[in-house]
Image (tube, rainbow, N blue to C red; front, side, top):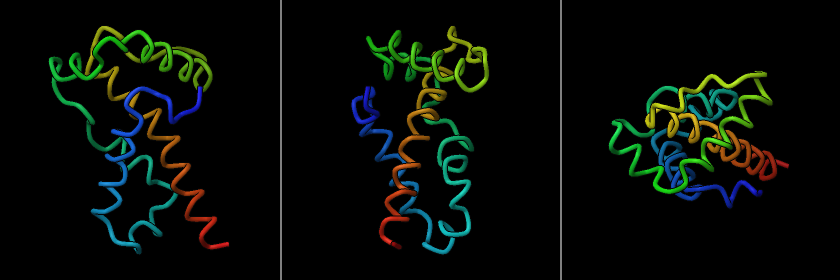
Length: 113
């Protein structure tokens, strides 16, 4: 599945680009290697169990599968507590955010070339 087809991809991408707009070019340049961390790991994307359940909607099992595949591939085991909707949403946005940030960095590099 292409990342653009992932659940709420456009919403997560907008979140990232809003984050980028809050920072000047110099900060972005100085933190290019840590953009993903700053955008998706220093604060929760969704706070609150109710909000997380609403956000996940009927895609919850697809989201859980994406998280499980990612964590198994990168860590050899699943760490996310799937009984906590807030943790599920935030791990999922972290994963999708990784692809979005990589695309952004690739675009910057293409513009420089």
